[in-house]
Length: 93
Image (cartoon, rainbow, N blue to C red):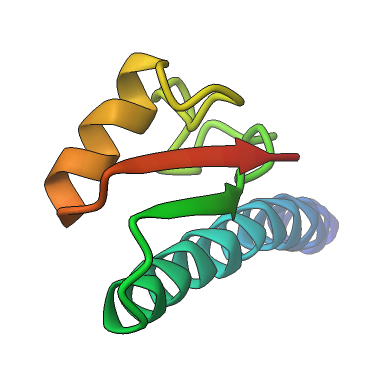
C-alpha cells in the first residue's frame, strides 16, 4: 500500500512538471498564431514574434524541433513566413 502511495505521488510530480512545460509552450505558440493572423489582417508584411522556451521535458511535442531564430534569414523563420504568406518573421526571447 505504501509503495502504491509513493508511486502515485511520484506520478503526480512528473505529471505536474510535464503539464507545466507543455502548457507554457502551448501558450507561446498560440500567441504566435494570433499575432501572425492579426498582422496579416492589418496588412503587415514583417512581424516579430516571441520564441517559445526550450522544452524541459521529453513529453513536450516541441522537444528537439527547430524554433524561430533572431534573424529573418534563418531557415525556420523564412519557412514560417512563406507558410503564413508574410514577407519576413523575426523573433525575440
